[in-house]
Structures are given as C-alpha cells and as structure tokens.
Image 1 (cartoon, helix red, strand yellow):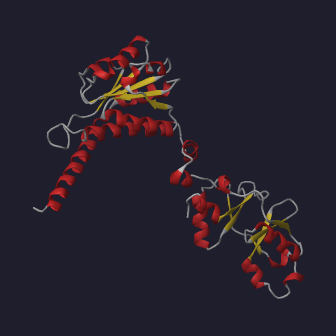
Image 2: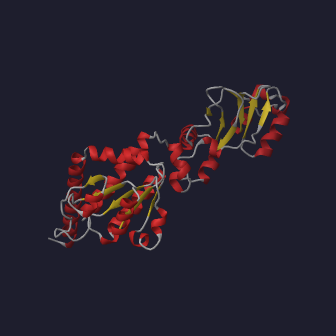
Image 3: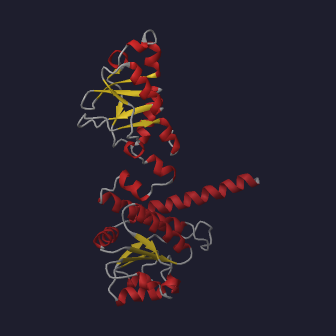
Length: 320
C-alpha cells in the first residue's frame, strides 16, 4: 500500500467512525435534552460555558454559536474561575460544564460555586456516574465510543459529539425563538456572511435621481448626470414611480431627444425591489436582467420610491 492509499484509508476510517458516533448520539437523545433547552429558556441571565483542554476549545465554539443565535452566552475558563472569574457567574445564569470524563479537577470550584448559590448546572459528559454528572441538575450524555485514534487517547470522536450537542442546543433554541436571518445579521454584520444577510434597505441610496412625468429631457439629463447612477426615475406628483430612463432609452430616442419630455422617453412599469428583500436577491435579479440598478418600492403600499440600489453597492460589501 502506498503512502497516499494509507493516508486516505486512515482519513476515511476517522470520518466513518465519527459519522457512526453521530448517528448513535442522534438516536440516543431523550427528555434530558429537552430539559436542558427549557432550563436555558428560563434563564434570566446568561449561559456560562466552561471546560478544560479540548473540552474548553469546544466550549468556546458553543458559547460563540449560542451568542450569535440569540442566546447570550460566554466562556469562563475553569482555572481562571478559581482565581476571581467566579464573579462572572451570578443568579439567573445557567452553567454548562463540559468534561468527557466528568472528572476534570479544574471544574471543581465552579461546580461547588453553582451548588452553593443555587445556580442551575447542565453537565455534558460521556460518563453518567462521574462527579460532574452526579452534581448536575440536567444531564447531556454523549455516547462513549472511544476515539478515532484507536487507543482512546486523542480527543476526536468525543469532541465531535460534544460540538454536535452544542450545535443541537443552539439551533433548538434558535428555532423556538423564531430567530430569523435579519436577527442573525444584527449579531454578525461583518464578513461574507454579514454581506449575504444584508437587506436592500441596508445598502440603498436615499438621495435618488428622480424627476416628475412631463419634465423636459434637458432637465432630466442634468439630474441623471449629477447623480451618476446611469438612470433616472420618473414619478407622479406623489413620488410614486411611473417609469425609468436609462442609457438604452436615451439611445433609442436620440433623434430630437432634447425636444422630448420624460413621459415620451421613459420605460413604463420598471422592475423594482422591496426594501426588506435580501440584497443577494437584488444582485441575482440585476445579473439575470443585465441591469445595474433597481429602484426600491414597498410592494405592500406601492407608495413613493424609497431608494435606489446599485450593483456597485452590492459589490462593495462582497456580493455579486
């Protein structure tokens, strides 16, 4: 067997073992999971996640996922907790302590603190008879299936299961709270994901190139040039969009253009986009129709034009 074949065989075995363990975890979920979700929902404070070593690394991720999906949470290092950070835990909080063995000595002071002050404790471990699980109010048990290394020493299957349990908690809480993409963006405005969750209202221009119906084209061209969007909207007296004039409309009406008015030149009933629509949807429309901008109109009221979205605004934040 070549090195490449050996590497691939090992990798496939690891992934297969972890996938099988995840199936066992899913099948074994019971009322204890629902109890953990209810306990978190009842909390008036925050969810405190703690763990040491690899469990701590997974705990950091679980805390971040909870916080970004509407459940206030943060990670407290158990060693630091013993040196003053226990002051970060208070009445109304819920503690989620993670330890595969359930015997991590670094957690001892944190566990004692929760018992002393009546702070609800959720234990996440693979050992139901461990110190952690005996002290916990609610038990999240992951199946004990060894580790992918074959000799039970390298956290792999256990950390995968712990991470999956944390994700399951976060998503269950998110769905119960009807947490929506726009809510997620409020906690995650940066990066590619933040851009994908931008709405048209977030990116649109309110200073728009608009003229009323019947305006001489000489004036319309001046507005079009000043705003630099390559388009001008034509409205009625109430500000409702009747049509648009683009470079294409100008070329089609070149003969005697300056003797015409906007009503004669405009394209009627133009394509528009709602202010609450996702910016990604607007980009798709502009790409499909090979246009560079969309006027923004609320379809429920069909009232005055509220903005203009240009493809460059979307490209600037990473869409397109």
